[in-house]
Image 1: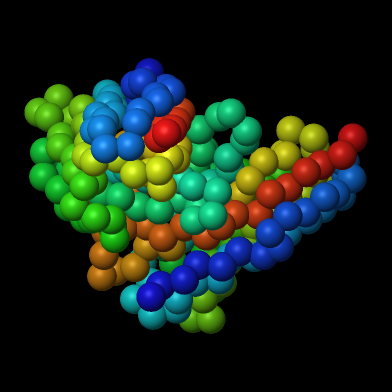
Image 2: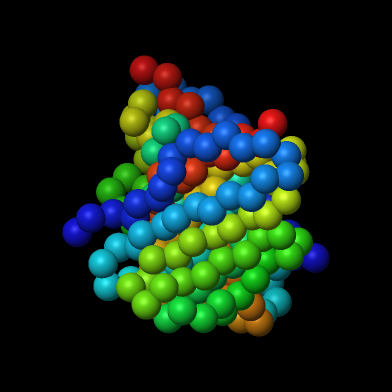
Length: 114
Length: 112
């Protein structure tokens, strides 16, 4: 089976712009979770989508949003970028939802905001 | 505020040494505890998902134990090899939310 893929792998944006990141889960997986990784904060949960519905959301401002399509592919969007949004964004897919789910991570998108 | 603490923050060992790290988490509303290995320039890789108090899991030279009553899990690596060099992350899931809370990780470096 192909693994989780994320595009693009690297991205440079300017403050105030918006960005859309994409995640394609493992075939058959219906849950996609998004995480932000920064040196000071570690891996932080952004949100989880399961069967096109947002199941859970982390403590991030409304500038961070996401969606999931019928083929389980997911996108996350960050509007009005700030310097502090520079981070590695990881998505992870699972066959199921809930905290007992085993997650398979993608390679991440490295976002730099200048 | 739910806190997941990992110790030590980093560890340097010689090839062949056995080592262990700790993950501390809230003991209330426990649902699951995950361990991941994250090698540089790769994706985090799931090692174990543990849900029951007293659980012990093993994969090759790596094993983990779980104590949900006191809120800790140990990860053991027997006979460390250079390829074990990575950051080891634990993540706690409560029964009240669907989100996993990650610790800051323990970075292991194994010298040949």
